[in-house]
Image (cartoon, rainbow, N blue to C red; front, side, top):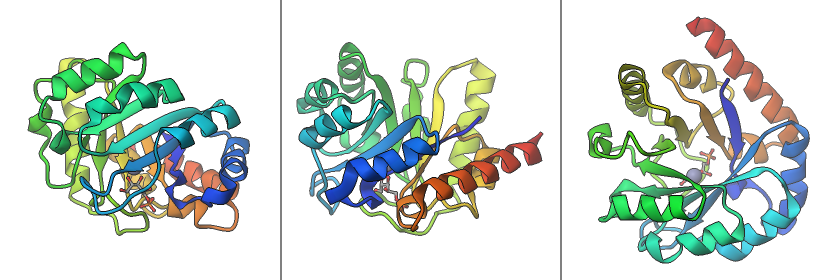
Length: 224
Ligand code: DX5
Ligand code: ZN
């Protein structure tokens, strides 16, 4: 069953715990945390102090998506702050194997993120050892963008590879997801569905989670 991971990028940063509680009540198991450095992506968001505060406010898994350069310098701090899952961009990590080792050494689940234009075969060497692959379905940096359809081809490719090789990584998608396209997305093989504006941008985040979950189940049923 696909899981919904609400992205707090679209939440009210002055009322984060309130917004997290709203989706917690809807039964989600994780929160997606977007970390941007103003270098790798043209935007700045939050760092370890906010993760630390979130850790005190919720028992939900914290899925930290690092859109930063020099990730190695910050991984232990994010893990110590309470990140359960840490993903880094293939495009920003020249020493990807070392970076993934650092994440695992800190006891977090290790993921690699692919920008829309980055092919799956760049992960060939690490697919057997990672916990998840995050496929960006928008160019990272901002919420509220339009879903890029060809990124689903990469999801299908990753799904086929894990079946063929009996690998255990999960497939996450991020960007432009709504109740209208989530069915097609889970049908392509996604396990974790990140959604920001289509959840926190609505007046009722819990209801938005419920709707998206229902549409995701319908998508799976279509596939069966
Ligand atoms: C974009 C971020 C996303 C963002 C998605 O760079 O990685 O997680 O919050 O926002 P929506 O769901 O609004 O496209
Ligand atoms: Zn993200």
